[in-house]
Image 1 (cartoon, helix red, strand yellow):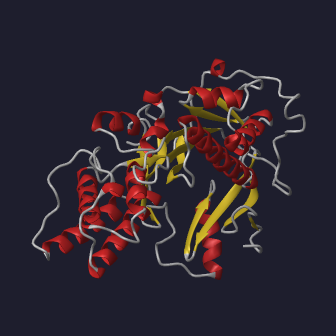
Image 2 (cartoon, one colour):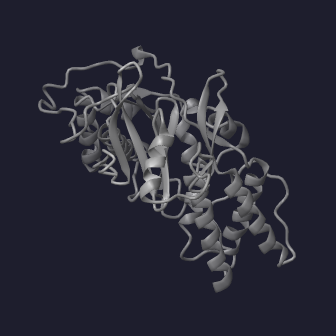
Image 3 (cartoon, one colour):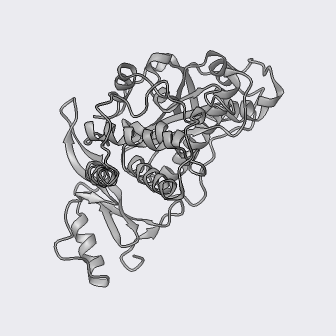
Length: 393
C-alpha cells in the first residue's frame, strides 16, 4: 500500500488513504479498507486501485466489482423516500440463514417458531425477573451461540433489536429456559421483517438553529477548546455533520436497579453508531442516569469526530446532541446552572466542558420524538415502529 502511495490512518490502521484529484482539479481522498482478506476501495475510480493491489496479492476471479456483500452484510444502492439514491446496508441474507438454522434446531425437538409477534420481546417481559429452570449445558451453549449470531446481526445493521439483544446478553453466564424461549421469539420477529436496511444518506438534516442558544463560558471553562488531533491529514472534500440522540431508562433493571443507556449517532443523515448498554452504577435519580448517558454520548461523539478528522474528512461545527431530560439539558448547556449532587460532578463537568469547547451543543428533544428511546427499553409496536421508521426502511 505504501508503494501505491497510500498511508495508513492513525485512527484505524486498516484504513488507508491517499490524496487524489477530481477531473475539475478538486482534491479528495481515496480510501481502501481491509478486513483480513477483504478489501473495499472508495474512489472515483476504485477498480483501478484494486487492479493494482491484485498485482501484488491476486484476488478471486471476477471479485473486483461494486460490492454486494461485505462481512456478511448485503450492500446495495437504494432509493430514499425523497427520491435520492444512497448506499444501503442489510443483514437480510445473514438473518435468513440464521432463521433456517434455528428452525432446524427446533424441529429436532418437535417444536416450531412462535406464532406471529409484533416486537422482538413482549413489553411486559423482564429477563432479570425470569425464574424458569436453568438450561442444561447443551442448551446453555446453544443459547450463547445464538446470542452471538444476533449480536453480529446488530453489527450488520439490525439495530432495531439492539436493546433486546443487550438485555438477553446479560444472562450468558446463567441462561434460563425463558431466556431461550425469548430468543426464539426474536427470530420470529426477524422472520417477519428480514429486509430492514440502514441507508447511508449523505444529505444534511434540517436542524432548527434557534433550538441552540450560545452562551459565554469564559468564567467557567476559560481554556476549553476543541482539541485537534496531531498529525491529522489536511481536510478535503465535503464537510460532515454529527448529530446524536441520547436517553436513559432510569432503574430499568428491576433487580440491580441500574439504568439502560441508549445512544444513536448520525453522520449527516446516516446512522453510524447504535448503543444500548446497562450502566455500571446505580443512580438514585432520573437526572443522574440521564447525565451519565449524556457523558457516554459525548465520549462516543468525541471518538467519532477524531476518527473523521484522521480520515481527512472536514467536520462541520459542533455535534448536535438531543436529550429529553430538562434538568440535564439546563445543567449542561447553561453556564450558571448549579450542580445539586456531588456524585454527578465528573459527568457534570465533562459534559459542560465539551459544550464550552464547542465540541457539542445540546438541545431539548421531546420524549415521543427522541430516537434513542428505542435503545433503552422494550416498547409497544406503535411507538417502536414510529421511531424506527425515521432511520430504518
